[in-house]
Structures are given as C-alpha cells and as structure tokens.
Image (cartoon, rainbow, N blue to C red; front, side, top):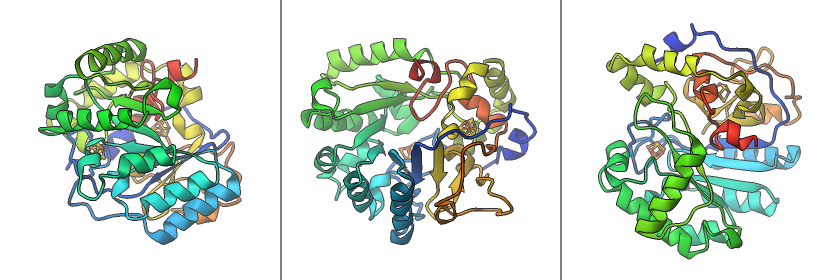
Length: 324
Ligand code: SF4
Ligand code: SF4
C-alpha cells in the first residue's frame, strides 16, 4: 500500500493549539469483521492487534484522575476486544458518557448476539456507520450483504428503544462519501436518511453525521493508485473554512492506540504522528496523568484539510452544524 504521509507532510496547515480536554478516544484494536474500502484504520478480520487488560486499566485510571467526561471507543470493531465490556461497565460506573463506534454487522457475529442488550443496559451511545440509505452503495463500499445486515441491526437497536427520542438511548448514523468528493450538507442528507429509512424500513435514529474521507491509509492508497490524490487534496484545500479551526476535534480530544501511545487524533494515530510531549518521542497515556495539556501545539499537515473543508468534519459530524 502506498503511504500518503510523504505527500501530506509537505502541505502547510494553519497552527492549532489544544483547548480543554473533554474526550478520550481509545482504539482498542484493529480486528474487524469487515474490510471496508475507505477504512482509515486498515482494519479487517486478519488483524490481531488489540488493547491489553493493563492498558485498559491505564485508560480507566486516566478517566478517573482527570474527570474526562466522554470515552469514545473505536477500532476495528471495538466489541471484539475481550476487555470491551469491562471497559464500558467501569467507565459508566464512574458516570462517564460512553460512545461505541459500532459497525452494526458485528451484532450478527457469533458471540455478540447479546451485544444490543448490553449496550442498552449500560446506556452506551451508539455511533454506527451507514454510508448510504441505498443497498448498492453500501455494499460496494463495505461488502456484499452489509446493507441488509445493517438494517437488521438497526431494527434490533430500535426495538430496545435506541433512536427514539423519549428513550434517551442515542443512535447516530455516520455518512461518508463513496469516493473523492466532499460530503453533501448534513441537515439535508439527514432529512433524506430519515425519510427513506423510515418509509422503507421503519428505522428511527437520532442524528446523521457527515464525514469527509481522509486521504490516508486504504483510501489514500486508492487515491494515489487512481491518480486522484492531488485533485482530492486540492478540493479539500480550496474548500477550507477558517472558522472550522475552532471546532476540530483534536482541540478537546486525546487519541490512544491499542498499545497506550497517545496522539492528537485518530488520523494522526494512523499516520503514526505521536502527541508532542517535551523530548518524549512517543508518550504513553500513563505519562500524561497530570500533564498540562491546554495550549499545547497540535501536529498538523495536509490531511487536516479533511477536517476543515466545507462544513467541516469531526467525530460529531459537520462542525458548522455541531457548533450551532
Ligand atoms: S467496519 Fe469500520 S473499522 Fe471495520 S473495516 Fe469498516 S470502516 Fe474499518
Ligand atoms: S486531522 Fe483533524 S483532528 Fe487530526 S490533527 Fe488534523 S485537524 Fe486535528
């Protein structure tokens, strides 16, 4: 696979500094039951990297020590980590808001049949990828049969109360474009999703988040192979909006990899750009228990335009609307 970092590091991006930490995003491993085309983690069934019990303990200690409000659990399919449920239970017992980046098809994997009940019981917020409301588009990007399995998963979650306003069980969907294009406006697309998924499948959800594809990892390699890398970067740069710099997720989030190393965001983690911490080349989360983070510089490069182009993208969808 062609690495896009040598190209990205040559592209200047406005300087950014950290604000108050409110979210710890942990990648608990790269194993996944799917192998999606756009996956910026290169996750798949053959990946074996996963967060150990010891690193999970450090994550929990950090949440408690720094009173971090939100734990955002990602992967791969995070639920495949054998310590996933312990992490969720312990964080919830501390009153931490927990988000699970769920791919929906995981709900049908053997051994995970009781996952919806577990997530509902712990009142975990579910953020689920569904890159289109049309079957062909989803299956092309995520694999044959993924759309139907995702619909079945959404129906099970709805049956438990997820996605229904009065239950308080939050179910958000995530859209990303099929190729080298910017996502359409979030509010209009959300209305389309709500109409089509509601009318055709009887599915309810809370919010739709639209995210731009990042020019890194598998998607970055596809751009290079297709001769589209420069055009896509040009598209992102031309669509850059300065106001989005205030709201990019790295200002209030720390990203932790499966070994406990720390990054400014998940994308920097995938580019192997560690968090800048004095003369430490690669700090561990355990070293940051009492560190002053506010005001620290963030490591930026060309890929950051993926967060600031157009309406902007963060783990909570379009920045412009998220800020409103
Ligand atoms: S489901 Fe998510 S983590 Fe798994 S391969 Fe697809 S994009 Fe990557
Ligand atoms: S990719 Fe986005 S979240 Fe990550 S450092 Fe750049 S602007 Fe921040």
